[in-house]
Each structure stands twice: as structure tokens, then as C-alpha cells.
Length: 62
Image (tube, rainbow, N blue to C red):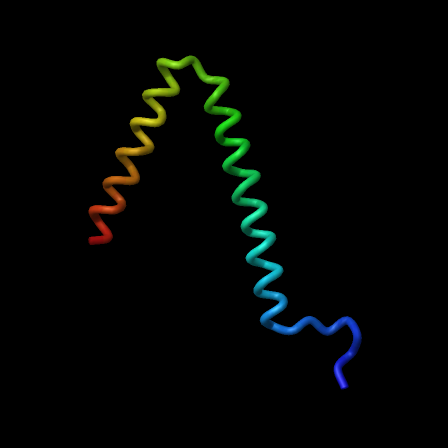
């Protein structure tokens, strides 16, 4: 018989995914908040550069 505190591997993975999902949402919210504080000129430049990086990564993976 398993101890009462035993967590199955499947439950542990599900818990980790939920925790990672929460952390990702918090990180995204913080990122949006920081970007919103930037001057619009710099915000546009930052967004443009990040989009260019994403496109380059996508092309490399093809």
C-alpha cells in the first residue's frame, strides 16, 4: 500500500504543467506591463526587433 503522501508521476507532471503555465502567464503579464511603460517610439522598435527574431528562428527550424 502506498503512503498517503505519495503523488503519482502523472499527477506530478500535471502539477508541474499547471505551475509552469501560471509562471508563463505571470511572465507575460509582467512583460506587457513593462512594454506599456515604454515610450511609444521605443516600444514599436522593441516589438519590431522581437518579431524579426521570431521570424529568423522560424526560418532556421524549417
